[in-house]
Length: 71
Image 1 (spheres, rainbow, N blue to C red):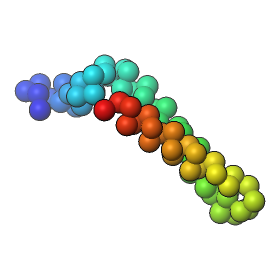
Image 2: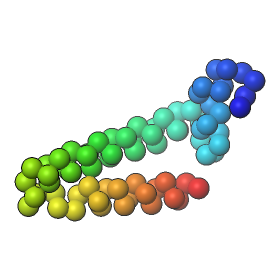
Image 3: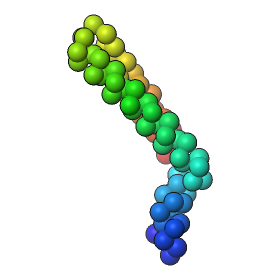
């Protein structure tokens, strides 16, 4: 943890994955967007099982691959 409390909040963690603050923000916002899409697809599938049969699992598979590629 940084001695600077501002750095501790905003830049220390992104630096651990070799990203800037804004680069990390972009990745996290994109990740969150696709998680929300997957959640919506799962809700649609719960209500109407014939729809979105594999959408959520395909999105989660792609997100998992993206996360693993970063480390």
